[in-house]
Length: 543
Image 1 (cartoon, rainbow, N blue to C red):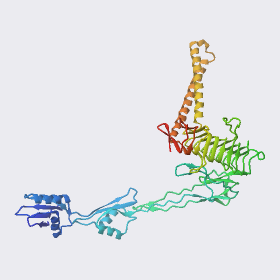
Image 2 (image 1 turned 180 degrees about the vertical axis):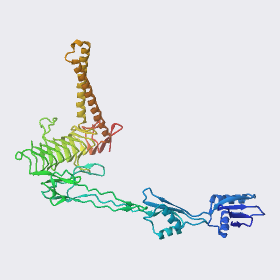
Image 3 (image 1 turned 90 degrees about the vertical axis):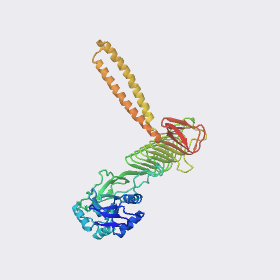
Image 4 (image 1 turned 30 degrees about the vertical axis):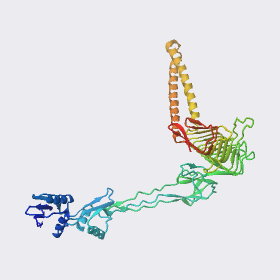
């Protein structure tokens, strides 16, 4: 037992449990004691490496200075160094946490080595020198002492385009979240035998090992083949991993392959060429003349102007020039469309007047839209952002999410209808369903009268007329329920209205009617930059 005695009989000693005790036995006068004095006494007696409880030390000083009664207080202890090694759930990492010794036995290299062995950690260990450095430091918190080697997966089969200019024809999204349908990529043509795509074989991965020495097998790489949808392309006879064009046409990237859409190129479409219908892409270098019809399963490209013609495409329609229909000049209030453009993708043109345009995604017109019927499932953009051109004058423009133009309407107050937030076809479908329900309900009333009459006059029930009437009534009830479900589904689409907006960048003129969802606003005076949207179910507008 070790004792340190102050001149006034304050004694420090370790008990049998290695607890450091302060024992005071009053005997004559005493001097004032503080924590520093206690530490100095312990240092002189080579006890400074013991663990001291700061709160207990403060209590000792306070008790000693304020009381003349004897006491025994526990103020610390002798501690051996301690450590713990934690292993991650995936057995890939082991961490060492160590506390220093306070007058007791320190953690040794053998202690750590035995613990590692007990836990089965045999791989990925740090070096002995690194462990010794940590031991010299005397403490550590979540120090990585072992790290496994993860398995390295091999590469799956890869598909590399051999035509740098070939790209998927899809719009770019600008910083405002608006799809730019103006530039879908130029028309690229390939010849028969041109290389399209190279498939590289999968590579093997590399085994790993966890800290327990267990081998980790990488996930097998995927030997994905070319897609089976390779219309217009073929394999190189000498290399099944090389895809070639089988025809002259337009290459289109698809997942794990390339399709080549047959493309025909004509100088123009007129009486001499006749109407065109082609299960591929049509590239028209010049104009499409009045009265002509052009159909393409994929895209239609027009290098010139379309004059009062009909164009229909399963993809996009791109017109470098304008769209010109015709109007009845004898009646300014009457608009007759002399041109019709429809496609499942987007329509783009420099300008358009007196035409009907219907697009599955978007309509983009660079300069102006005059007296047109524009219908797009997504958006209608007239004019380039920041530009001076971009007018919508007269006619109507209907789109689900966005209608944007530099100016809408004219100084002459020409009626111009703008609608957003509704499927352009919803109202027409709702009107048709309403008529069907009304007709069926009227038929129901008629059948019910027949059933009531027969039930009251059983002798009139000939050839199972009552059963037939009841089956007809059941069928009408079922039909009405189906129409009502369709009606509810269409009405639910109106919820898109809260996300829709109409953007006028410069001028909104008198005579413009704006509709968002079911709400209508009419302009009775000229306004500047305005953004229309629905807020709390009503049209709100601001700059």
